[in-house]
Length: 464
Ligand code: BES
Ligand code: ZN
Image: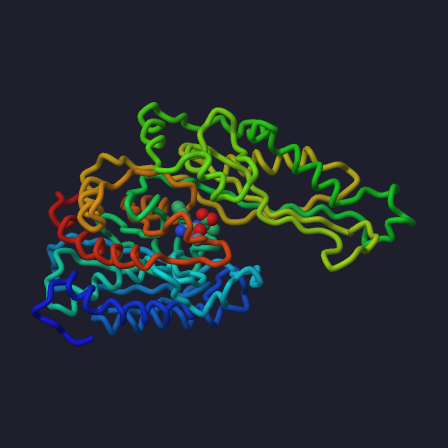
């Protein structure tokens, strides 16, 4: 990785492509699963790898300890009193649990290239995407091309579990992080021919419900029929939270929901996928969703309830005739602009308490949460991003609302006062959070190009 004066940043990226893929594979090999405490050491090692890599490419990097997983902060070298606009690139090095292992074609943390894809947990969500930005900046630094912006990388290790430490970190480092905007590649695009700027994300609340029945698993023949079955009680309770038209049956739930404008509905209808294609892609016999909305609206601009996990009784082979002692459900609700997580959480917990029969004891645990996010797709910065996407991908970009959540973007706005520019590189079939996650190497190439072309475009904008 020597300094190559004669190459432009984009030429540098092409020349060094194979090495960059190898380095991305090294990054991906860390099993940095933030939800599982046994991986704390792997997360720390992964963060250290990012710091070392940042230093190697010429950034001033440091590892910032937190109560949870460390945060990496890495800055382009800058002169005191720099007049350049400052942008912060945000990403995360933590990944979702890889389970169930048996559904992976090859082990999740052994990156495998097949065709034009790099398979591994974290390849697209989010290591590949933040590595594309790191590589684009490397290309400037190593070719001696002056960067028209000052750039800080903020790469955290708790995004997949609610970014608990980052909020305090933002408050403690407010000055250093003051910027024009946050640049984030942690969302998706419909296809390589449809690069996208995401201007809205859904919010989220999560909760766990546990129904406790008898003090121990009981013989279901001797005692069944005299005590409530917590699994049955839980199933009956959960079934009352959503009606058959896909509406959430919780009083007040829709009260603040902003309705979709005719303009947005028209834009969403441009998505290059039919209902039939989507149904086949999901592998379901028939789609289900809130009546009155298209599947594109349902998955990005309408609130939803999901059961993420449901556990009770005997899960092993064969049968075991018991009344289980308890039953547990992990729930999340996705929220849309104007819904307030705290208000919704209260309404949800109240309804669950009301629905719980007196024959079981209810325990509720509140999990992470995040507000929905929406910005104008017509702003100057959004237009600059659209120009960059067009130049990098060679086709017309789309404007999108997305169903996933990146709760910290609200804190970027509230604490730092800056909006987020969401330029995702994940494809719909990248299997984020699923077995056999992959990252398209074409998306990687074009994403690095986008990263390189973005800085001159952003530098042209009027300052905040
Ligand atoms: N990269 C996703 C968020 C995302 C994906 C946004 C696709 C839009 C489109 C991120 O890593 C993620 O999975 N976030 C979690 C947040 C939660 C754990 C608080 C999510 O959305 O489930
Ligand atoms: Zn994720």
